[in-house]
Image (cartoon, rainbow, N blue to C red):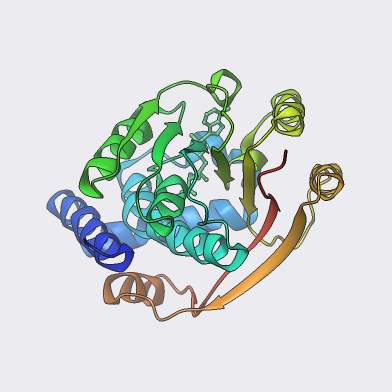
Length: 251
Ligand SMILES: C[S@@+](CC[C@H](N)C(=O)[O-])C[C@H]1O[C@@H](n2cnc3c(N)ncnc32)[C@H](O)[C@@H]1O
């Protein structure tokens, strides 16, 4: 069977090749710089600005998505969340499917993946990701509020997505997660200079359910393509960083 590393390499190759058919390295690099600026300085614009333009879409597809995959896979493995394998992984705000794919591949690829994504282009690309990775799954091109309910034995992941929700939607999601039974839940967000006010009540809710909050710094040797883009864009991803909230399957 193809290992999770081999599957990732094949997917990264496919993402890179597709973008290089449309854009030059320079154009993709400009997209990476623009996106990293939005992530760091203008998070309020995030939802609307990420996908508006070929350069930014390319940067998201063949740079940030693979980085998110590597980070989430490392977190899942560090938490031991790959075992027992979830029945279905629900990836909320899935973008191109990085987080759901990371969990499913870490778990030996048996989980079905449901990606919930409201943005049309990302939803279409997520479908392509699952096909390239030979993962069983489907995309729900709707908002997180309309996500199907997770069942006992399932997992829910939201990577870099909860922060993009309106406050009301975020509160509703927390209530849903709080009430879920027999489901494990992982939330991943960047380590930001300013802690967002919602993180504190979310953390308390997770800890109340026997969960944990962590900050992660994984040393990483990036594949050549990611390392080249990283360097050319003036970034430095020698470590993959992020913070997470997790509760394991509970009764
Ligand atoms: C920063 S991206 C992260 C994507 C992916 N989870 C990853 O780690 O690469 C956030 C994603 O959440 C999606 N999103 C934001 N709010 C959403 C909502 N209310 N319903 C569905 N998707 C949403 C955005 O369209 C975007 O694709």
